[in-house]
Length: 82
Image 1 (cartoon, rainbow, N blue to C red):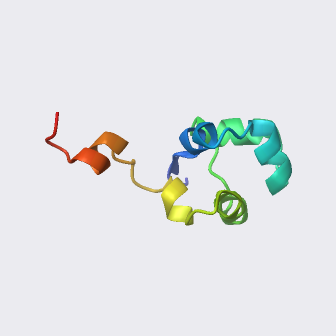
Image 2: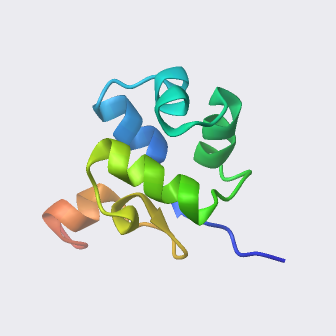
Image 3: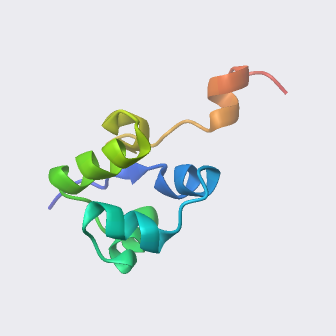
């Protein structure tokens, strides 16, 4: 059984104002597949993960990880900041 792939896809998509439909069309996937990936119900293939990263101009590891992502506030302000 494969590990869950964690992602920040929904956050990046919202930040860039990109719909699921337009992302799906750009990377050759179905819009429902994008939703499944965002909810952690489906792990993208390496090919699809690389296409999504290229679409956003980001390294694949900025969008996908085998470990849960730390909250952005921790990354920006430090773990113990309030």
